[in-house]
Image (spheres, rainbow, N blue to C red):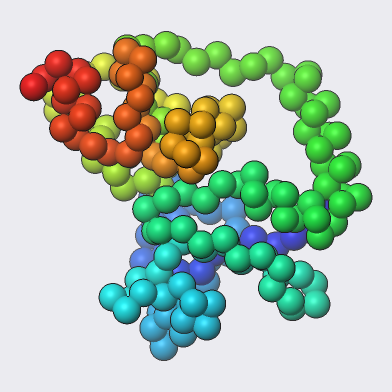
Length: 194
C-alpha cells in the first residue's frame, strides 16, 4: 500500500529522539509540534488546554483530504485494525493483495508459542505503566511472562476482547483473573498480597 506513517508530538525534537532511542528506534519519521507549541495538534482539535494532546490517528489521502480521524485518551492504545480498515477503503486492490500475502505468510509460519505462567502481563515497549508494573513485580519477586502485543497480534486481539475493544496495556492474566490497566491494588489482591 502506498502509505506514509508520521508520528507527531508536542514534545521537543531532543525528547522525541530520546523516546525513539529508548524503544530501540522507530521505523517512521517523528515530527515535533513543539514551537509554536501544539499548533498542528490544535488545528486537528486534539490539543488539551493543559498543553498535551489526545492520542489521534489521522488518515489523509493523496489529495490532502482528511479521510478518517480516530481520537483516544492519551492513555489508550488505538486499534490498528481500524486503521488498516480505513487504509483498505482508500486502496482496495493493494489491501487485497496485502491481505493475501499476509494470509500466505501466516499459513506458512508456525503459531508463536507462549510460555504460560500464573502471571501473564500483556505490554508494549513504549508503555510507561508497563515499565512501572514490571518494576513492581520484580521488587516483589514475582515471576511473570510478558507478551508484547505490538509484535503478537493474536495477543493484541485477546487484549482488545478483554478491554472493550482497546489495546490497553498493561493487561494482566493472573491465574485466569483479567485485570485491565495498571491497577496495583487489584493486582495485589489477585496475587494474594493483601
